[in-house]
Every structure is written in C-alpha cells, then in structure tokens.
Length: 100
Image 1: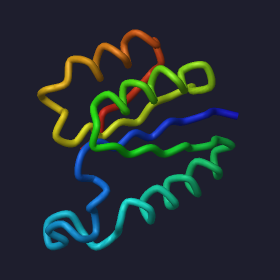
Image 2: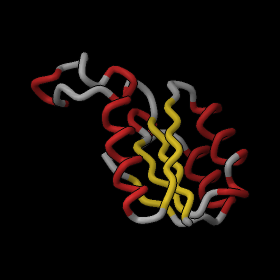
Image 3: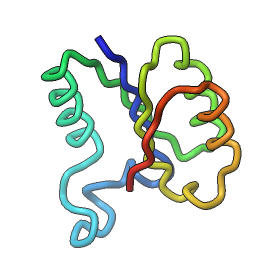
C-alpha cells in the first residue's frame, strides 16, 4: 500500500466559494474525497492537509515523511515565493509532483 500526502496551500480552503466561474463549484473537501476514492482504487491511501501558513506546510512535510511514499502539492500562493517548502520536500527525499 502506498501512502500519498496531498498538500494544499493558501486560499485553497476557499475553493467552491472564491470565483467559482474560474475555479469551479467543488469545495476542497469534495476534491479531497474524490482523490481519496481514486487512491483507494489503486490500493493507496491519501491524507490531505491544507494551510494558509508556510510553516505549517513545512512542518507537515517533515512530520509525515516517515510514512509517506509520494507527495502531491498545490502550493497556491507559495508557488513562486517559498524556498522553505521546496527545501523541505527535497530534504525528505520523497518523490513529488507540483500541481495547480
């Protein structure tokens, strides 16, 4: 079984409310549940975490590193500004993909 960590950055907690004509009507919880169901079809688990705080995202990467096989991250507003998140992912040496 693979353990996947899904990380979402600032303002993604507002999905479904914020500019739904651009970002859609599904909220983050619905998206996370859809992804958990897909993961289970592939004998994997998906744990989701969202924060508006860069330090919380870094701490979560470090704290979950022992039991995580793959990271999916949508850093939101931290995409172009966070060296700390990038360094945390590289430090734990877990394969990852950045999505938007």
